[in-house]
Amino acid sequence: MTGDGAQPWLIRGARLLGGPATDLLLADGLIVEAGTGISARGAQVLDADGLIALPGLVDLHAHLREPGREDAETVQTGTAAAALGGFTAVHAMANTDPVADTAGVVEQIWRLGRQAGHCDVQPVGAVTAGLAGSRLAELGAMADSAARVRIFSDDGRCVSDAVLMRRALEYVKAFDGVIAQHAQEPRLTEGAQVNEGEVSGRVGLTGWPAVAEEAIIARDCLLAAHVGSALHVCHVSTAGSVEIIRWAKSKGWRVTAEVTPHHLLLTDELVAGYDPVYKVNPPLRTAADVAALRQGLADGTIDCVATDHAPHPVEEKDTEWQVAAFGMTGLETALRVVHQAMVQPGLLDWAGVADRMSVRPAAIGRLDGAAGAVRVPAAGHAHSSGRQAGGTHGSGSGTHGSGTHGGGSYEAGPALVHGRPLIPGSPANLALYDEATRSVVDPTMHASRSRNTPFSGVELPGRVQATFLRGRPTVLDGKLTR
Image 1 (cartoon, rainbow, N blue to C red):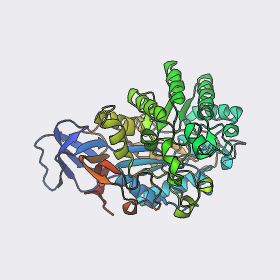
Image 2: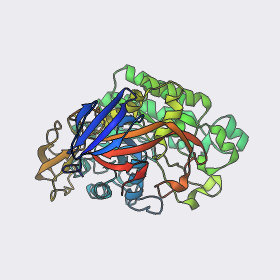
Image 3: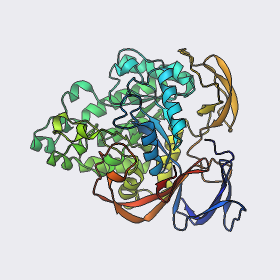
Image 4: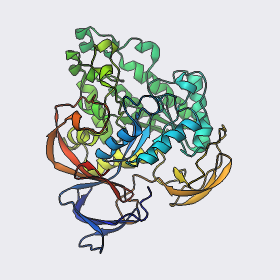
């Protein structure tokens, strides 16, 4: 898994972040040389002429469904989809069955990711026990487990109790954790189905007001400032939310935010046909909201793109709108959608895409190699503590270190470092992307177990040609290597 001992690879002629053609030599899990005219005896050669080289993408928000909903997705199929989309790390949300609210469950998910091997899986822990919103989950024990959880979220449900939200923010400060909020005031969205506005009135479905999102974001920004803790806002969807986050950042508060690919491209006009593939939480909004989200991502108010990959079996989507499940798949189309929504209009260049889809999400998820970076415990020491304390952690710099977790010592393995520049010494996590091609999205060809993509039959630009995880190819020629 670390890439140590893997066959060296020489990538010829890749355009790093869309720049001049450059050769990259990958060996022992690292980029060991970058330049032109590189030769390496015994290395496997990949001709990347014309391909864009990006640092491996990092997704802060994916639902891998395992344990409990393997009919919709598994860690194996979800991470395969991620690799095909150019991702080398994904954060798996906590709304599994059982809920990922204990050290034991997050370690199970972490181990499943290690076994699958397509990309790194970093579990997200629940904020509240059972996602019930009544008492805090075992935050310290999850942080101190083998999974080294740093992001906590009740995603799918809002932590609506202000006192509980404050306590969560206070608690995670001890280990530089992040509370990721699903901003949805529950009383304002009872029975809501689509964005509240002209379209909801026309189709006769209960409206979902923008203020239900904006009110929670405003409250939580104030709480984060009061506590001095880190808040991350999930799937921002309204122009008002962008303005609130911009205001909070202008104060220097520790607030970050994400937007989904589908909220960058699709509008609520699509729900007029009552096709539940467009039913999502938060709902698709207006064209004005889409424009504000694009501008917010371009100017850095919104930090990153996160897929909110939400697979569902066909019977949960192929039904009448009112009873259909909320959610869309997104791992295999995310980069292509961002290409169309942000790169083609000139709102981001490829360096900007790398920043919003790799560098910033890696930093928010504490996967960037800075202090507190997540590490791979040595074999035989991946046990949980069940304790609620934060514990003692090893140094976060470099690639190796030692520390304690679960009340016992361990020798840490390589840090799960992502979002680093494509230069010698960085982990060899990268994606090669063909920006020149176009093709129609065919969900029957996707690796995900579910088919509920809103882009089925839509022509999108680009294709991920290859993905490397610590120097080992997980995707070559657009296909999984295993």
